[in-house]
Amino acid sequence: MKFCRKELFRNILTHWKYNLLIFLELAACVLMVFVVLYNLNILTSRSSSYISGISDKRYYSMEIEEGSTSFIRESKQLQSQISKIVSTIETYPKWKAYSYAGNSFGLPYDEFGEKVVPEIFEEGYESGKLNTGNPNLQVLKAYSFTPQVFSSFDMKISEGRLFNEDDYILKESEGESTSVILGAAYKDYFKVGDTIHGWGNTKDMKLHVVGFLEEGTLFSSPEFVNMITLDRYIIYPMHSKMIMLDHSETVYPGASALLWMGNIVVSDMSVDVQKEINAITNTYGFPGIKCTQWGGTYMESTENVSQRNIILLSGLALLLCCLAAVSLTHVLSRKAEKNMRSYAVYLISGISPREIIISILMEALLYAALAVLPAVWLSLIQFKTMVVPLYKLLLISLPIVLVSVIPAVRLIAKINLDQLARRKSE
Image (tube, rainbow, N blue to C red; front, side, top):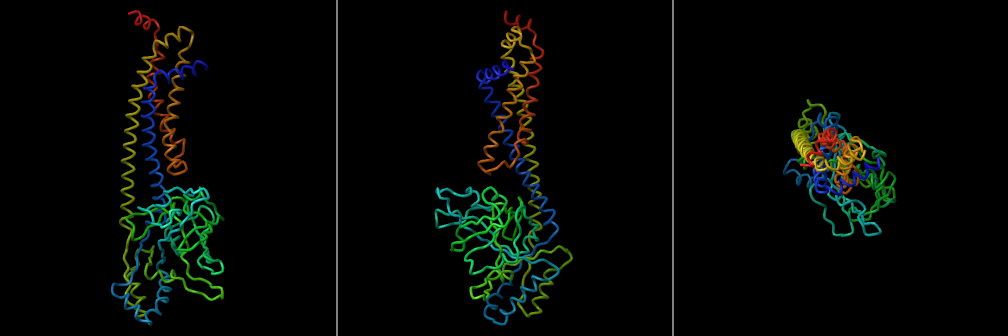
């Protein structure tokens, strides 16, 4: 074994140019397949969520027909009907109504002036960052959801709990304080029960973490061109009211948001949503509410495009691995040929071919292990965790080097000392 270690170090130092080429080729293969596996994991998670909770539903957005808004504002009688219409839509048995609103939260830097979470959290899963006038705040993307959003998109909790009824009610006695559910990516920085102090709605605010969403939880809306995951989002309850210090109640703006930003999800494909909405508004003599279906076509097309991209990337990765195996076979064979005289000396000195082959295999395994380091570094720097398990990365590099080393091993096993001696004498 002592010989194998010495031979390993000798080969590394003597043929460093070959070794650098081997490392770069293997690392490129591992990085390519790492990208494929990472995208494949996301696609699998999204597909599962899409198929189980989204693909069999129809989604509609609601808005008051153009020109009626100002008319409603001028009519106290129509305004008095709004809460009744909202209540009827919310409790209608043929669909599930929900509402949401974009939100944000300003997270102060820590005591050392460093960001608490990586900068990528400021981007959510949409393009661009939210603006802030305070350079010492990370502005994190968030949503406010009514209770029905979670079931409409089949959202599940991996730790903690969903919001309960009390979470949707603010209390003046508790100040600016609310329960929140965090996306899965926040697990590395917070835990259930934590209180996060920051800045929300132009006021100091306290967030009480009550749960974490499952990784890859999907959400979409008419404003998006595709579905997004909520892994880097903060989820607020859309508060319905506030209980004041004198025990009176103030209706919160979110309570009537359904009428202006409302959405409906229907599981029964036979339901004529627009006809049913017209019946409701006619009952109260209210102007028409337009229902527009969204999501179905582009959700499916997003899945199809993603699957084609994965097939393309998989093909490219397989081709690169094959080319790397062929190239490494040539390089390792050339190294073995250059070492033939040294191997002949070893054999004459009593070293067996088996020990020489073991040293070659040890060297190959070393390159296989080193080749995963760039992918590991990228994963830890970019995502702060191993998004693709280490063993999967090794399963990429190991087969390549083991296949590539076969010709070199066969060459060593067939060494003929007489022929080498004649060659040397010539």
